[in-house]
Image (cartoon, one colour):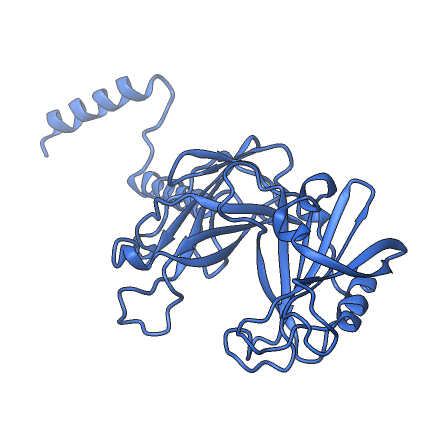
Length: 315
């Protein structure tokens, strides 16, 4: 570079930086660029997170603050499942969502089986859950299995609007705090059901059902004791539904200090009892039904002694 060229460059620099300012070095500019890039990467990592949790969650921080950020689903989660939910309930700060889908995956190469994962978009005003599946479009005639997915929220749903992201439908959640939990179960039993009482009933879910049994025999015949379900709903609605009133009262009892009825479906003589048992009662405006219905003809339902002990231990 000539002396004249160097002088011209110095003049241009002085004009650009102003009187009394020095032009920043190339090394300093590069360092500042690196700092900015690192900061942007950190922000993106906080806004979007993918892991093995029950859902892909936006804005879930250590202090459980709710962000207005939108979740970006990873490509490997599978396509959206454009299906209506059969029900949804709260479970503390989580949601339990039920829907009809394909059978659970037992063979990864079977296109008629599918795993499902929810993608969650949660803000301070609304919660949107979009269900995705590994095989959504295959074997539509096999979409007949009741499936349940748990979605963890950053904070309880509260009064926020809940939407099925795949259909755009606003959903009303059943208050899971109304459900009672057993203080005692037979050895080897665990929860095996968590669903709306009537999945085919349109509109708001008025009653919810949870069930317990031996998971090794629940889908097969020959169980020593049939599973038991507890249904909870408004007494004025639940206790007047046909599937409840069709059981014939065969005795009186008390559950949790409240008058209750023992009932059988098409009650027969003691030596030939019918194959379903029930205890039903109310506590204020809330109605409760404990029922045992065998999976196969010839299997025995849980007897009233077991239903009674389970009912008295609910809390």
